[in-house]
Amino acid sequence: MLLNRKDFFRVSAVGVSLLSACRLQRGFKALSDEWTRLHDDFELSRDYVHMACLLMASHPRPVREAIERYRSELDKNPALYLEDNNQNLLMEVRRAAADYLGAQAEEIALTDSTTMGLGMVYNGVKISPEDEILTSNHDYYATLEAVRYKSIRTGATVKKISLYEKIESVSEAEILSNLRKAIRPETRLLAVTWVHSSTGLKIPVASIGAMVSEINARRPEKRRLMLAVDGVHALGMEDFKVTDLDCDFLMAGTHKWLFGPRGTGIIWGHPRSHSRIIATIPSFTGKSGWGGWMTPGGFHSFEHRWAAADAFRYHQKIGKTKIRDRIRALNTQLKEGLASMSHVKLYTPMDPNLSAGIVCFDLEGLTPAEVVSRLREKHIVASETPYEPSHARMTPGIINNPEDVDKALAAVWELRS
Figure 1 (cartoon, rainbow, N blue to C red):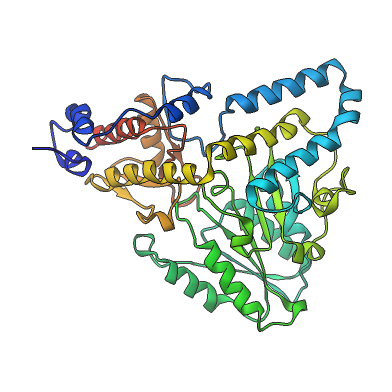
Figure 2 (tube, rainbow, N blue to C red):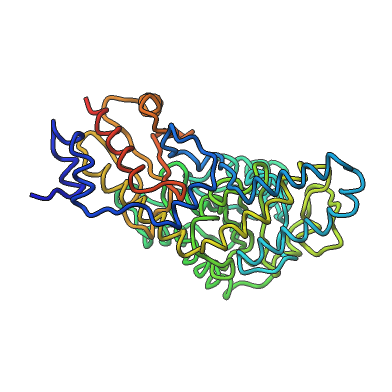
């Protein structure tokens, strides 16, 4: 009798030993030449299955080579190379980001991280004491702290709501309904995180944007509700254009799913909202449109910032749709395997419309830290969510393959009590 993966993980004593046979019976094929070549672009240790690259990406070959090329030129003649090239190279990064996002280069500001982008947007957006900032209990720590700081400085209120009652039964309709009920006339800014790193939930940002536009159609322009999105766990994973989202600001680090240079990030601002924000850090590139004015000045790790263009091009060359589909397939494989194990509680929704590349779960009898530690002993690199409550987390991406996922599932199976 042929076993599918779900049946396989329900088999008790002999299950793990049959892994290879199960995969053959399912008809899994070796990686295509294209994905094999992509894996060879990375210098990731082959001694581990890497399921935590959401934290910090390994640089693919084109990005490594660009960083080294710029570093070499700076080492040879730092003052002259910087003077002759910095402005043009920064604009090249902004053009590459704009091409990837379906935007204009003037709409792109460069940052060092998602957290820097969140701080700059929420610090700079024009809010009055009578205004309200709406966010959720599920949002990223940096978002919650940034809007709290804004409240202290301006006197504006911050309201946090729950987007859903239970993650096990969450739906797009429930999220939209709870947001709509929470928006009041004084609500001026809606701060959301597209993909929650605490549970792996992906909220329906485009539908939220459409809802906000509907609300704004009944408001005077001076009271327009603004939508700001932390998109770090969607950038490099989801196939989208910023114009599809109907948001005002999108902030993201590029050194995670996009495989950009470590210490790089972007802010995108809709032209309608450029006048509604004030820069936080003085710019050295203020003559190159809104994005230049918003880009912090000072001296940075220029070789990394300039090489971010190569990360955007790398993803464009592979294809955004192809990347999204690959990540969905690997994550579906992981979620189905985890859901079939009686000692595992899966939190991330199975529906790909409500999830992306992050899969969160608990194991019976083990803390998340113990799960991560025990998996590492088996050469599976997972992570623990830094939230309360905390969960174990694995994040298969395009650096992985179906065999990696099976190895991770087999390791989780072996941790049953």
